[in-house]
Length: 485
Ligand SMILES: [Zn+2]
Image (cartoon, rainbow, N blue to C red; front, side, top):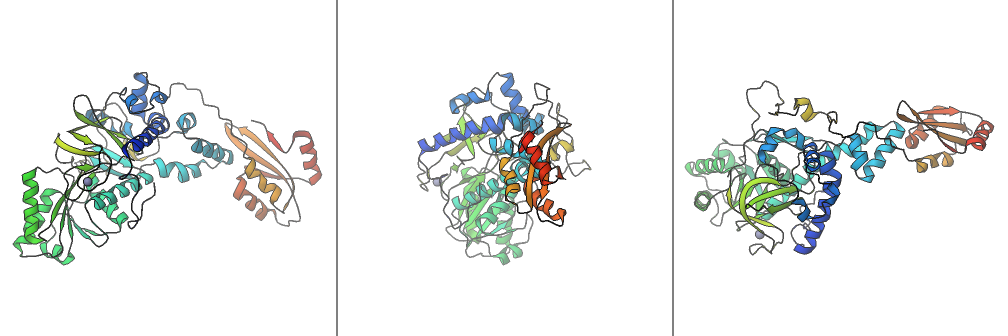
């Protein structure tokens, strides 16, 4: 997903008819389960296999109910098993065609690291981490874009515009509330200063915010300091409460405290999500229900009334049918407050009103926390490093992949004026595919530049110079392209 510029109205997520949208969501679900969740998530592959569920039998949300819900205790037991790990073998067996052909082409050219860098890493490699309690939650580059977009939507739902200016008193650190606001404000093009808690009232007043953002206790402290210092902030019209639910009396108390230093019409707007949900949902300004993200996630009410959450698009740390500890009402009709469509959640109770604080600055001397895994070898390396050896595979035979001949790339040999004749030969040496190119140069004094130019397209293992008649003889015998694998 591309970040949407702030001056362009976002499409689809908040204006599509429920029936159409659900059909699209089920398409997303099928694709996600078959090509991402099942192949790359150690936990869910185990869970599908042990329940005897073939991933391709999940064709809609009714089928998803075959999958046993995930408890948060499953997650804390082995958090790293929930991180998508696209191993080469899993990609080849289950992955998207686009990735398979990129990998086979790269192996052919001996440039697998380039595929990792250009294709796999942006989609899958977690480059940003924060903590829900002691569970590390990883975001790939594409996930960071998703988080930025979700953050932008929270600000849009809160009724903010580019003219707003945010003073943020959220404690800086590896928490969702901090980073979603940072990324969201940037994506929306809003001015924001992330002071953290404990900033002086003078400093806040000097920044002339129209929005104060942060968890309730830090907001309350900031407002109290402003009031005690007799500050009056004209234009302060929004308190954006991050990462916490408020009951009505607390919401009212906070609004009153805000109105004492800000505008009379000041509103309190919440953004929150339970642990494991990858982006906080936002209330629309003046409403008290959370708009959710139908293009990123699926919410359902389990038979016992608990809300379960399923990723439809996230990479990094992902969950399906995660028990959220939330009870409430899901509605999929037009919001009477703001007119947007899309699933909205009205929370009646939650196991925790505050998102779990990141547990990371504990006594361990290492910068990287070790996950409290019972069974998984969750060393720091397995969190931040490359995929560990994939020992969950059922069969140990190396999957034999026939690399398709990259005929398009060979066209350069016909087109390059420095090539009089050529023949290409594919070999496999010690399991690695190689491309040998026999070339008869035409009117070229220096071969180095010629081969460098050809190699921009071919990435051959080796070039062998021959006379035109030698190559003609080879082609008569074996053809233009020889496959020795
Ligand atoms: Zn609304």
